[in-house]
Length: 144
Image 1: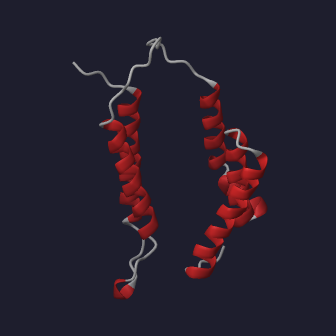
Image 2: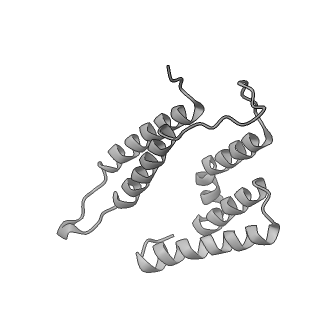
């Protein structure tokens, strides 16, 4: 009998969230003339999330040497929870600092939490901010 592993449970949860995002994106308005509307990016993200969830479900668990069955909460988990808490605070950060500085701040927080060299974190934050501004602000004309 095959037991549910943390990967399979996470995969199912990811697919459920992706399904909810995809269904909710279906309520967005449709543009005339066959142009992609505001549902395009959420549906694309939902598709990628569902594929990642499927990958987790069908991945094979590899037991490491000296591995126990007890699940331990490590520092990596605290860093991940810190990042998730930071992303949950994005709307407040946007109200305080604005869209582009908020994105840069979240990327910098992630770099700090995952112990990336400070200069790499600053470059990643600046690069991410510039790419998002270029795509959405300039190319698509979305006001940021």
